[in-house]
Length: 101
Image (cartoon, rainbow, N blue to C red; front, side, top):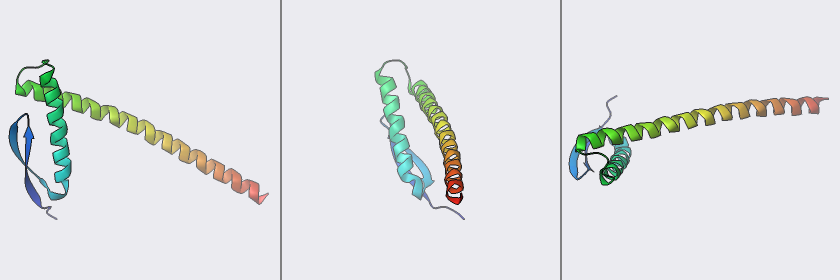
């Protein structure tokens, strides 16, 4: 099944880019472009990096680092939920055993 593609214009560091994406993902694309633009502006204003290419690489690294940190936190939360579900099942079994005696 072919998804409907749409051409979307985004502005990053005062430059316009035309990007094709699936229609239902346009909002996410615009949010991602806005996030990247903010990150690149922050780096550029800090004077840490010269040049658009280097600024984009540093911004990409920063955003990738954020993503990896969030993935680690998600794994911890998922493990906690799994453990809580297991404990909940044990408690339910215990309560059921008490009721049957």
